[in-house]
Image 1 (spheres, rainbow, N blue to C red):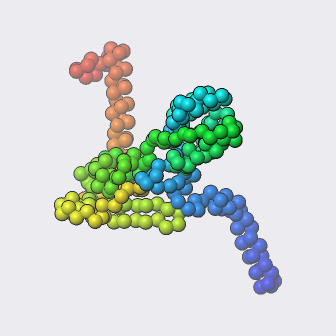
Image 2 (image 1 turned 45 degrees about the vertical axis):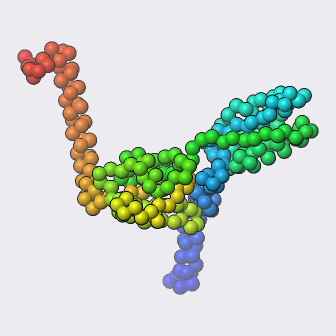
Image 3 (image 1 turned 180 degrees about the vertical axis):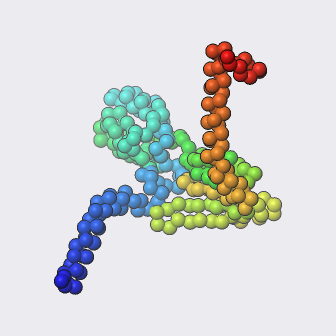
Length: 266
């Protein structure tokens, strides 16, 4: 007979083997998990001070007298708007790639000025300009789903009218979600009350990466449920009708059917 101690050791060994099977994948997943913020490399408050994101363009304003200095002629390239490279860098003449993702206009100008000073041996007085859109996300019963651009000083009402809403939307339960890896915030807003009373205390400012979720009404939830249940039937009907149309078109071409008179075969 096997003793209780041997059974315990065998159970521990099996548990260790099972744990080791998934340990590598679990470790990789833990390494990829977002530790803070939204998860993007570029982070900041775009509505307060614009920063360089992955979809933005950056260009510099270089004084004409600087371009007339010996060796500084190539700096005219900076005056052309350039996108951010996939590794988060921009190209600076005489220097090369410089990591710039997430930096504000003030930080960019100071960074490029410092890099050029080490090459040209004199200070280059330039300014940076960032152009592009930052986005929030709209989901649920909205007319425009997905990422939508943020305008200056955008509020919840502005975002909702920008995304629009469907007839099934429940404006009494609109969720403004501020995502974060540590402390996400979900705000339940009665937009209908705001629109009918003008009490705008809950008209929160919209920031980059915010999620606007518009719930359906009770009847809207039932309608969406029926839509999902009947979707396979509708797909099958479309497939059958499509096949019938192809067959009829073939019969017309071969002379077995006449448009408007149906089929006839010999």
